[in-house]
Length: 121
Image 1 (tube, rainbow, N blue to C red):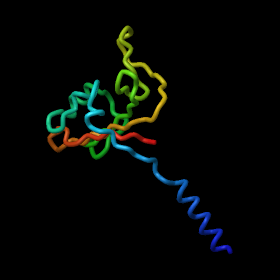
Image 2: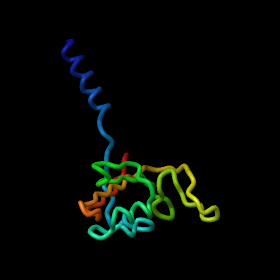
Image 3: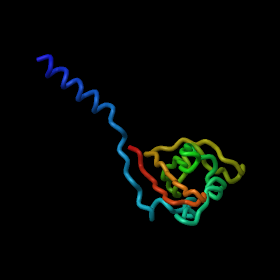
Image 4: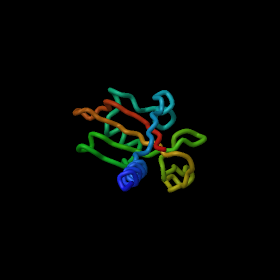
């Protein structure tokens, strides 16, 4: 009996520790609006930093950069940041919906090798 209870408890604990579901966004949907400049084999890390600002994550000596976005009615919006045109600055804004993470991988020359947008649910 104890073995059965322990086994059930182990299954429940493991299920509660599962990773969030990641759903890739099609490139034709993710590379639009403010992200239309992203071209594998052409876009540089410097251009990316100038256009998107400080990444949310930096890995492997800045070879991999991550940014968080949400899909708004007018296209992709940086999570927690929105451009306020009259004030000419970025401001924090709350948004609803699932966050999407843009993962950019740059080659040794600093040119975009691969990009993926995933929805985190």
